[in-house]
Image (tube, rainbow, N blue to C red; front, side):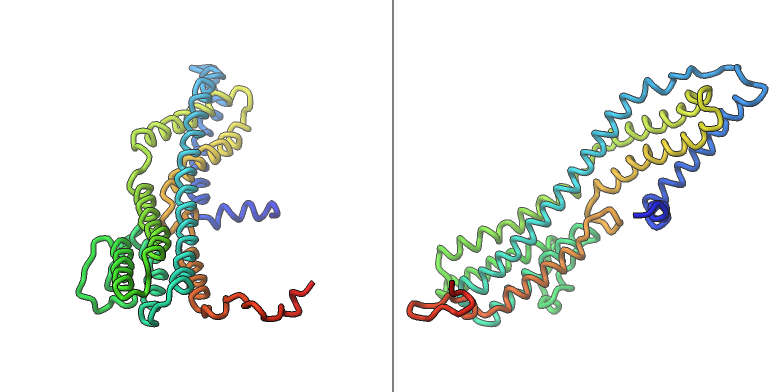
Length: 299
């Protein structure tokens, strides 16, 4: 990326733009100690040049812990959604290839597998509603936890399949392995959403950053003079950026640019599940004994 691209990214990104405005405000504040240094009040109540050094070590620990904790939450959320992609594909393959079901039962299974990630996305944001789902528009049933309702529907269907001898106990256990993972993934995402980093710790980190930036220009003005203004502005940009980005990243299920691309993941699941379940079982059968190996596979 060219240097102009790095600068343009500040204005294109809402998060970086917010950080740049706050850093500019700190830069304007740094004019005050520079003015004092250059004015007739020079030497009056000068701050020690090491006034900010005492905060550097503590601030470093706080920012490292804050950033690592926030990113760990983001990465755990991404891992859970990656597991959801795999579980959905496994269920699609098992429903379409492992058992022989009537077409309308197979279509219902396809519908619920595709709907689950979209329901989970809405559940983690503003909330999911059962009446908005395909196949449940006219349903009189209500649910306060729509992801759990969809999984329960699949278990109800499996009970019917078992009673009609369309599926046996071994096949039920194989399907249950991936079906139960859906609610495990949902529970993990709910834990991340509902358990934020302790508010007192967040406030403590912000106070430490603010105190450091307020004392920084007074501590370096004797050595840097007018260079204190750009140096303070740049330092403030990265210090405040770490805090603001950490605050955004610790809530990964929203619609901000730093959040997970849940819409893209949902579309990926829908597309691949559709492709898997559109394949006819007969198309995947290996050649039987006595059939000649196709020319492309001959050695």
